[in-house]
Amino acid sequence: MSEAVPVLTLDGPSGSGKGTIARSVAGQLGWHLLDSGAIYRLLALASERTVAALDDEAALTETAAQMHLTFLPDEAGETRALLDGEDVTELIRTEACGERASQVAGLPGVRQALLRRQRDFQQSPGLVADGRDMGTIVFPEASIKIYLTASVEERARRRYKQLKEQGVGVNLHDLSQEIAARDERDATRSVAPLVPADDAVVIDTTELGIQAAVEAVLGEARRRQALPGDD
Image (cartoon, one colour):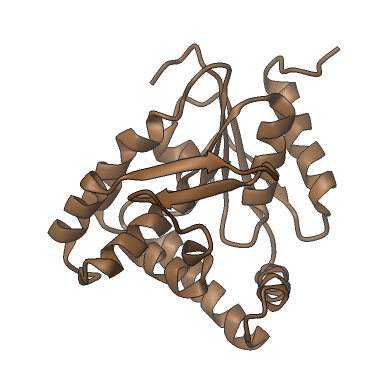
């Protein structure tokens, strides 16, 4: 890793707003963006297509090392995810893909195979890295570490609204239980558990709108390091 290139890490559970906030922060700073969750979701989709079992660590690790992935911006400024040249952005955003990604992410071989790929995103002028272990494992020397959180109820409500807007039928109660179960699995796994880095600033977004959350992140970042927009 290049210590000369600044990194801002944004970790947190599903529904905490980190993806949307990371895109906005990266855009305002003019920095690169790493959506590590998308990488694990791409692996989940690739492994499903190769019919790899969720407990077959060797097969999953091989898939992680060999799959061809690309991230490209579209005309709207959103990031499109390509797997072996195919745009699979919508396919990896499903709840089923997210659930599979959460399970394969707990395998040590898989995480090691994807570690170098994630660190390769650290390029000038800077990087905003969004994920679950960005500040603890992938970029432990990052100078700006933020951990975003929100109540399970609020995170389920946000996801429910998002899915309904996409025309997906979903039950709010079931969604809350699924999110709570994923939180438990992510927080208690033996490899790279979902926890704030010791030097991370924790921001609760339960009562915050996106713009307020973005400003909170930028405010913390500017207090820790001179950034674009400082006086």
